[in-house]
Image (cartoon, rainbow, N blue to C red; front, side, top):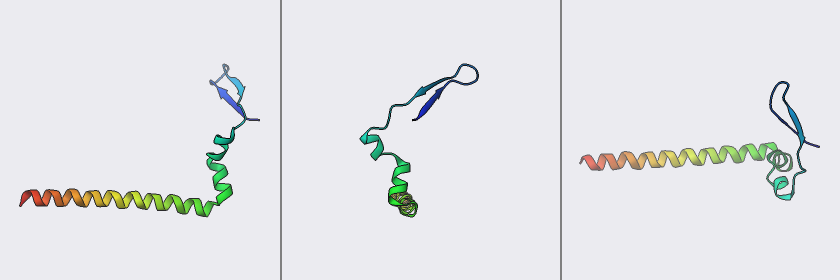
Length: 72
């Protein structure tokens, strides 16, 4: 059973959380790491980060070329 604590100090209320439904269980990241494997998930995260970096560099290159062409 899961618990959620509201407040701090003397005025805290501990409430029980409802069990996870099917959609929340499918989107639970810890479960994905356990099911797929840590190495595979880390590899996917690194690939996503590399894709975003590549896209940022590409857009930066376009901006530089647009500036160079504008000065000609």
